Image 1 (cartoon, rainbow, N blue to C red):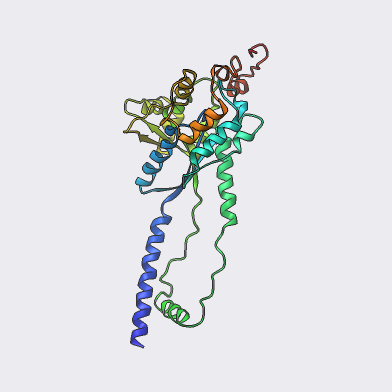
Image 2 (image 1 turned 180 degrees about the horizontal axis):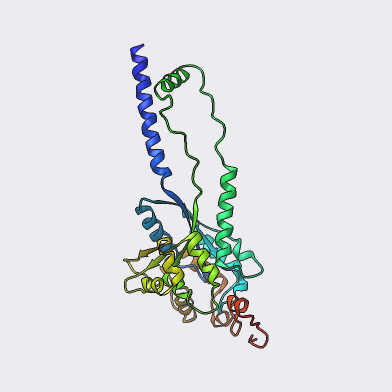
Length: 307
């Protein structure tokens, strides 16, 4: 009998330790990092943004990054030199196929019209919430007869009304992952709706990768909206600087120069196989007004599009 009681005490203490660990984890907000953009093409720098952001957020002790999402913009964005979303999505999928936590979502890229970033954030937050509802914990499973049941009975004797009720798991939060250039773009006239900026920084939050000498803090200070929600803007210093950009990759390709080690090898192979970037492709959408500017200023492309 004494031996059984000792076994029950050990089991009770183990149960207590597990509850403490669960409480520590439950206090952390689960975060999904969402990167929107052209990814024209995706580069190693895009992938590094996710790693830098996850390291920073997890180190705070307040957050736990559970997923990263790459959401390429649709063709309707009308950016100069923007190649087909079909190819941009495939390149992003190839670049992330060996990642255990970053994935590509095609919803935004498949829309016929350009979708505002605030709406993309809302789409993914709602998708998370719907998924969470579908995976609610099942009813408690009865212990199997025998020793397990006996131990369970002993454990209940020690833990009567002492164990806190399990808390309902908090909903993961989607946050926008970006570079400092996005913060700066908030000040470009007619590129963003002011209410969208408020929604992005107020309801979701931003994880912004910056580098030494960058003016991210200055952008925040000079914007009333950003300043008001500065606690929801996480600035991550990029100490090992990396100046790779899609624009520079496209330029190197037009010059016939190697882009190896700037993009994943499998992406380079795909670009070469399909001859994706050239002087001709860079002229795509020349003279076409960018979709946000069309929408927010009422301008159309009549008379502005070049053949």
